[in-house]
Image 1: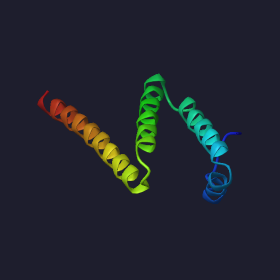
Image 2: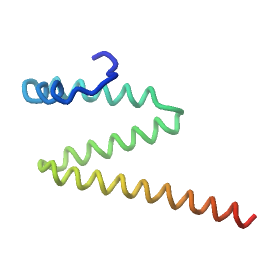
Image 3: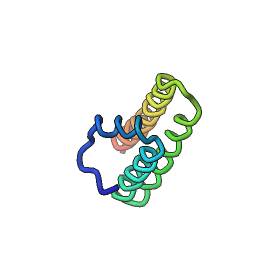
Image 4: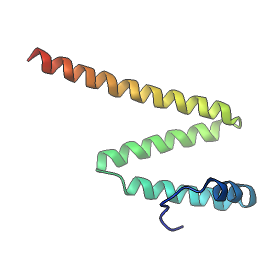
Length: 96
């Protein structure tokens, strides 16, 4: 699949309905393209880890609502982690 510049939900939805195997193949290819095109090695590694975690959630449950709940929880914990680091850094700078 060529590089995706815009997301066409209708096309992806139709593909998922008509050919689930090809949908999964294309989805994996797009994810890999996004990871390869991201910043530095650390960013790419983090994205690979996150993609793996998302796959685990997707494979673990049939209920999309449960999968979404797990993903939102994961994202919230990542944001909280980053905010805590930023707050610590600001505190350290203020104490200097």
